[in-house]
Image (cartoon, rainbow, N blue to C red; front, top):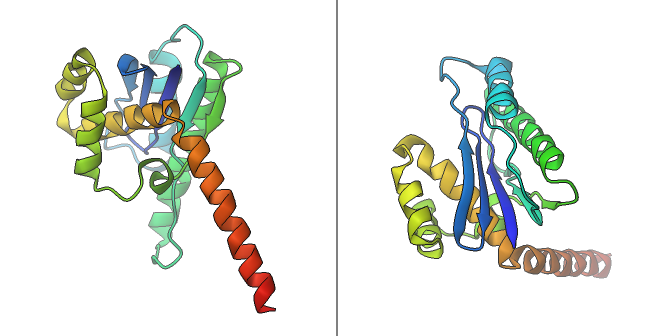
Length: 187
């Protein structure tokens, strides 16, 4: 099964194509940190749409991380603006993926949905154990400041291959049904 994982951010967008445990192709945007706001989003779009090229081959599933906003966390204006810009880069990535991989199904899980409650370091070690040796070398050779984004993109692509997406959707539906039943029982 061939899958694409995308980790969007305002300056570093990571895309990884996995075929089983093999990292076939990856792209990391290279956007100047001095760019802010909409300028950063446009630079990410230019980098992906113009310089990344068009990978070939059929892809079965695309996974793009959706931002998760926790209701009890106070977000200032800057926080909301940042989230909107990350959402914009995710939309750019989804458009790019859908143009390059016609017919691929897509998921947009939040981080807890695709990786659970593991710490970032523990989850990255798990991802490195799941890929083949050549892919591990490529990932370790990625600059440290961008490696986490690429590891997350690889992790999402692997998650899509393992059927976890289907299990999480089933669990999510079961939990939603249980909440609805509890609300009806209360009145």
